[in-house]
Length: 245
Image (cartoon, rainbow, N blue to C red; front, side):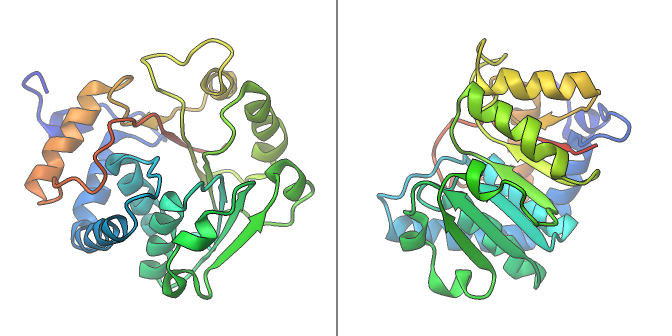
């Protein structure tokens, strides 16, 4: 971390925006619960080694922590593939003791991979194109997680059609933005960042490509909290998070 402590990095907070200091506080607040969930996810992965795990540990943990802290009644997940992100979201809702997850995907692999006891009473899977299924939706969205078709056209749909239906203050996570330090031209990530910049909305990312000091700082924090053993060994962490305005 080039000599900087986590506490020093936490001071880089932007007023009114999701920032490192806030994420550090969440790790410390929910460390015991997160430790138990990591054990469950490790066991799930070991039992289903063929399941694609697109979220790296930091992204999955931050998602869990955000859901725990904000206690959403309605979570909307667009894109689940094999259900790895879905299980993290469902465990957060389970540990909150409230909330329901609505997942939309063209691929229904998640149905086979999400444990029944985790899904029961808190999960609705909708098989189909989110652009059609969420047209004129009546969800009161309290948390939005987007990890679906990574194209500029799909991103234009959700920033122009779906984002305006999400109330101010709601946390939003978008995957596959920072595969590199800056998103590729004509990419999903470029559309999202342009949309945020036009509205003056700040964001948080732990991407090792775009925010290496944040990534290293959280890794060191996890060591102090006994959370450093890998659940998923991937090194692809392009997600960003922000609060809707």
